[in-house]
Length: 343
Image (cartoon, rainbow, N blue to C red; front, top):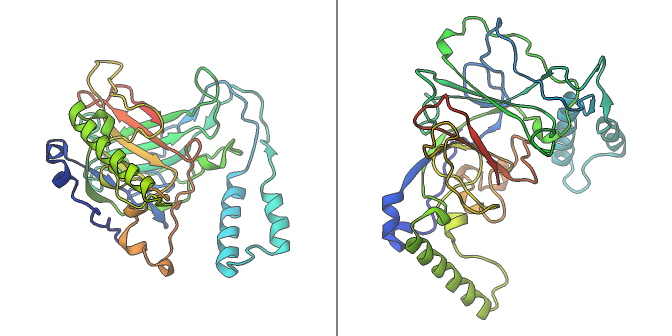
């Protein structure tokens, strides 16, 4: 099934004609539960990984001997999904709740011998350029981007951050795929364990985050929205019910490739390549939700009917405190280091 973004509630270029010069596109990936194989783009699906190539591992020294088992996490999710579908009023039975308590226990990894032992990374997503129009070019003629991360928040200066590993490859060079990739015995955070999802890529129009637009244009956008807010306060309107640039007219929520980054948590900032100082471009956004209360206008048309299901968290991936991860790449040399920002 395709996923179709509804028309925007307002023509933002009619409101602000100068925005036309900043129009771009982004590809919404629309991950939804399914059974992908290694030959297609996916989230949480099998990777097109060569049988004779070592699987990515985390070698940073950090504790990783205790946590939850990935199989228990997935079983818990399925149990809850089935229970609430069966009985929307009460959910799991008493027996199921006892099982859930067991599934949520932490365990010690067998044979754990030290903080520096290589830890298998989790396969997050793979994207073929043929499937994703706005995916930036990889090094040379690579056509497949593969994303991995460590299942523990124990990295960086404060030992509380994530570790991301991005690999580009030429898909036609993979002759034999690894049949049984290694998995970590336990993970530190269930939000690092994605559910298998197929993708329904859709290219849509997008505009930069307001804070990165020319100062005069940004001021005009801010002035309009401040005036609308004042009108609502004077009219004692209880809920925010008008379209805004940030939530409805510029940058879509959810997993996507290319386009512009949203800076809803920190101040907007331009990113520059640490190797050559070139302005970097958005490669990929990994989002905890496909939409939320403030961005519901982006909900696909096919899912507006409650009977069709309205799951805004299909991948079960969680970034930070229900935020998003923006990954940036150098357009001059895709082989240069990537940068990331959690919003």
